[in-house]
Image 1 (cartoon, rainbow, N blue to C red):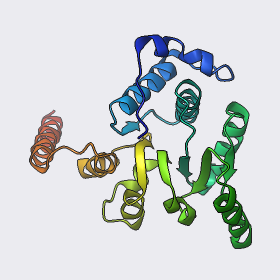
Image 2 (image 1 turned 120 degrees about the vertical axis):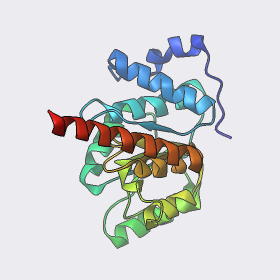
Image 3 (image 1 turned 180 degrees about the vertical axis):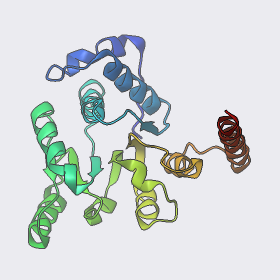
Length: 223
């Protein structure tokens, strides 16, 4: 199990494991919060807006778990193709101690990578895209990170159903827009990290929010 004990003393020394990363206070708070979620065996959603450093906070989390608690992986990061190179550069720059495999390229290149990975298992972290994660289901992952996780907003989608079947001990979702249209989308994300409220609670919550929205809309029309 990817079970670690986070103490106040270990958290106070967190920056010593992140010597190559300069974190702002709110980012450091974010890393500490994620480590506490990990200790409680509860997946989490890092919902900071775009540009606030979700990538560096996530890399910091992996480095801290790797360095302070000797959890060597395997870790998996899934990202859209559009930001894959950014992830690759940031990981290579900020976490050289993590043996990274960037699983990308044409079919022949991916087959070569897959053959080498399966033969040696000499890696800590695999980075790949939503579209190319066939290799990913072969492993029992310590940590799964899903970037732009609002793509999991539909529980019935192939992506949500496939990733749900992965063997994962701790799930981290990154999205600046956990709710785009309705609370059902948030419920889908919470379900993925095994933190979903009961159906009755969700129904009451949606009803309460809808009533509040209608009330505000009505009041605005009266002014």
